[in-house]
Image 1 (tube, rainbow, N blue to C red):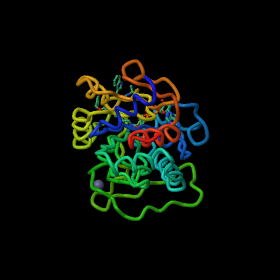
Image 2: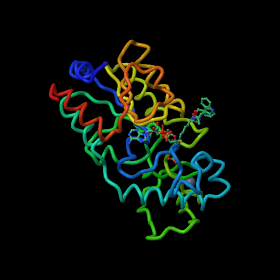
Image 3: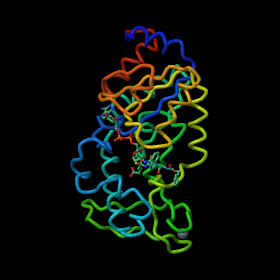
Length: 250
Ligand code: BJW
Ligand code: ZN
């Protein structure tokens, strides 16, 4: 199918659900999880650090890793793909569902329906789950280990409010994501490997209802065989073109 045909689908759609993954933020300078491991990711494997067990065993190591991630996100900016999705919402109903724990969609001007894997800047107690909303102190140079702050209520360690492997997704965020995926006319799936469940199954809610699902990814993913259309390009290249098409331009 050619871009003009995809343009017709976009122009006709009233409600567009968008599922984004780490590739969405790659062109902002945030490394993805499963691509070639470099920089910060070379030494620390998210598959082993992003678990309750890792935090319970070495809270200072895991906390320092998240401080570095928070510092990196603060230092980068939304890319043309994030900006295009915010622009799309000016003239379409757009439900953004993101697996990303960064805040780049919001900083681009999007209202995010659902952060299915939580947020890097929301903190809570590891033991009693009380929210922690004090100002986060991030040293200029972050050592390999930093003791996390302690909960004022119970003395437990503070943890980032993200979803680690083996943890349930926040029920409302996941239900909102299922509802949007099941009720949209068209779904865009941007920059995700589709490996991690249950988020990777959301496109099937649209596919099962016969709705078009367009994947935007420079590489094949776990979802490629199932989606109705695949666009082989990056988020920052392809999304601005799709917004033009949705406007009936281009
Ligand atoms: C570009 C690009 C550009 C690059 N433009 N694109 C077996 C079967 C089914 C499920 C399981 C299973 N074994 C275990 C499970 C469950 C597990 C799971 O799915 N594991 C898989 C590894 C198999 N899931 C869970 O544990 C979830 N909870 C759960 O299931 O609860 C129920 C339950 C509870 C108890 C017991 C049993 C069941 C929770 C999952 C939480 C995921 N958390 C993370 C870490 C968050 C914290 C942090 O950031 O540190 O979320 S993992 C990590 O992966 C992160 C991401 O959101 C998530 C998804 O990754 P994503 O976004 O797809 O990134 P990548 O790197 O994989 O892909 C990037 C893509 O971008 C690539 O395709 C590139 O080509 C592309 N790309 N440049 C466009 N410029
Ligand atoms: Zn507590």
